[in-house]
Image 1 (cartoon, one colour):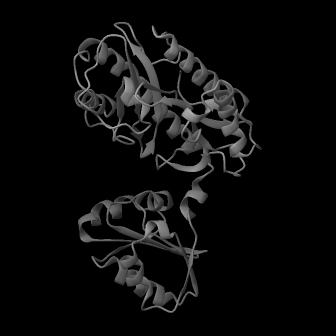
Image 2: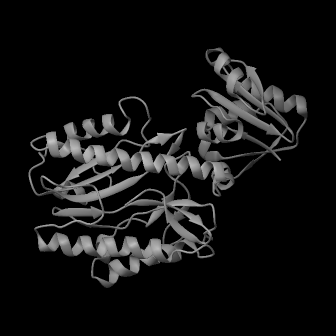
Image 3: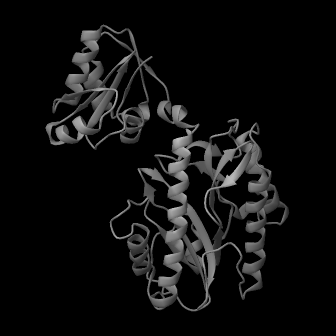
Length: 342
């Protein structure tokens, strides 16, 4: 198979190393990692199974390699390439370039045993960080705004530089939590507020992802069993938790992804909150925070052992509150296994 890659994580998956200026070409049994001289030492030390080629003109070098090997067809993922970059590679070579969307994601959808160990470790580190975060918020979070709380979350999740973050954490209070991808505001955290935190960290480049919604009293922890003073919030929370637990308990290898989605959505809809469940049940997690499989109402992907994805139902009532509970699961022996303690 002949293919070329530009995405950093796609390249890492192939050869164990990548950087922010690289291009990878696989031509049958031959592979080439092209980068510039800033990365010579790291590339020479870390690239596996590919020849390291140093040339600041990545696209020109790629065209030379394709011309030299006289290949007839090369696969590429249009999502990875700019128009300008693709044209620089393709315009001067007699090659048929075959677009294949999500080419690398499809290769990576089933995780190896080693990948599962790494992702599980990332999830456990993320869960541990949530415990530290709860302690810090209980001690020093009240009276602070969402900007400050988000800054605190970044430091604790990354262990102050030890780990990269999977994405910028979401720290949302009360009505701001009704926005699934909320950004920080000047809202201050007060006792008994609803607090939603969605965050993750990377371990050996693999991501974790976790969401908890709590009542921020002086004893709160980021676990799944929560008591809220407002009955309206408690009712919605219990529905989300039931949907979350149902999908984890009943997901099976061999199901279509949309059937797993239905395991959460049916419960939310029957409880009367269907219009407030505004996103899919989950998404795959690996080197990218969002990858295959996508657990949505439209996905016919067959769930298989070795897949890793999130279960994250939610209810979002505009101008009032939002609730989401999220865990990562791996399909093992036909069933969904949560990768970190609840």
